[in-house]
Image (cartoon, rainbow, N blue to C red):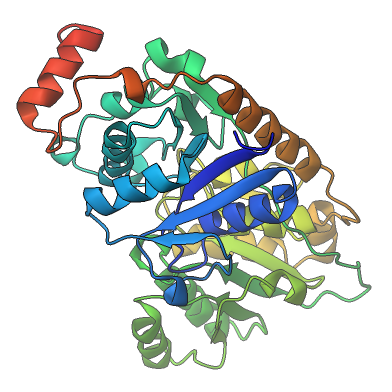
Length: 381
């Protein structure tokens, strides 16, 4: 800590806008006068979505470069938001080799099974839990916590994602429109909305679908909409963080994902006041939607159930039941204070677990992993 101002490094890819990038931008904007933030990224600054002067690039996988950056910055705290195991371990090794007493906050994607990761190919996450001075989770649901051994529960800090909202006025007329937003990739299951558009067209319903997003499946979706003949019903618009400003009375946000880390776009839409529809799975829609703000379908994603839910909301009385006028969101103030307290707590405790851990070798060989597991936890099956 220098000049009584905490120095916090945040490791982030920043290649495209997502929940993590939004969180980091929000933290910097709100705490820049209290915290000296440094961005560390494997994405070159000119290719990054984050416009921030204190930006340090290194080539991904180059531990020596990352170690040199950490030596120069002499961080009090480093935060690695929800990332893959290999990213967490790059940072862990670099902290160790830098010789700095930097406190390490590990943001964890849980539950692990929602990402369909083959456990046999993962580095044991227990090592991340062991090395972390704090484990950050965005939700305290049992579905999250149960994946972390009780040994580490005292390290867990629950801090929700900040929610951006838009003010929406209630109208007399209801003109239903389906909206979704996010990365156009396989897990988002956007083709389901094309099936819905096809069924709505067959029934001569004047309900359009607007998708805010970009990604690897964009061209496929455009072709598919033409094959189904619904290109006039199914519109893709480029993603912008201002998509919330386009929401209006009559919109319904639909989450078709096979799995979600949380579901920021759904949360932001519902917080703005429009109803949401989603499918029940371990986290995301099941934590965001309830009987007062939308419809949670207790099934795997399928167009028949989704179509039924949409048709329920065609009735203005039903729509108005779920619609909520929001004029201000006070929750973000509480979330910001949680981050203040966490950074302060980490900065005050100068002894980092990593700096006193001897069993982290440069290659993280199987033998080294086994030794650390046995030394720390006893024999683990």
